[in-house]
Length: 205
Image (tube, rainbow, N blue to C red):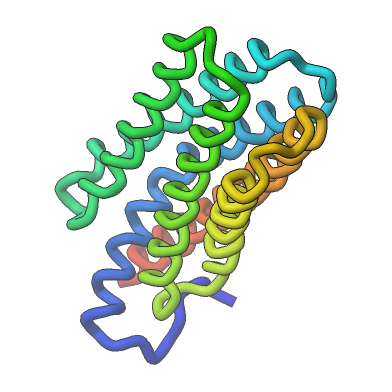
């Protein structure tokens, strides 16, 4: 079954098709972000007794990589995506957050948790909004919705339970990053498929 939905309004279909094309052309960036999240999650899960200093380094490196890829995607596609500014802002905020974690070696566990929570909620909302904009045009947008909901729920949980034990929080962070990374990798493969379908469709016109 090809990924584009039928019956969508012409205006929505055009706007959605443009976004799908942009995402499909940058599927490898989505995949790299997924791999970074997966690596961060697995490193955390396999080191449950990780110290706060090492966790800060892991998180800072992951957020920097995520932000750099997001900024690159936003700037590269600024002429085709009317909302590229929001994507750029999310990427820049991620980069700033990553730098802050490295510049604050004495950061407390509670402050770090709030950093992670704020970032997860921001990314989750962005993923959900993007999925909603695409739902009338493509199938399989549930991967993006699920990733966004997971991020928001994780961020809210950290805000509501900042006093949870260090081991429990470390496992939460590792599990979240692992699942989120797997969802992003699956989405990247889906986007790659959309790109192939689009190329075939274009060649047949």
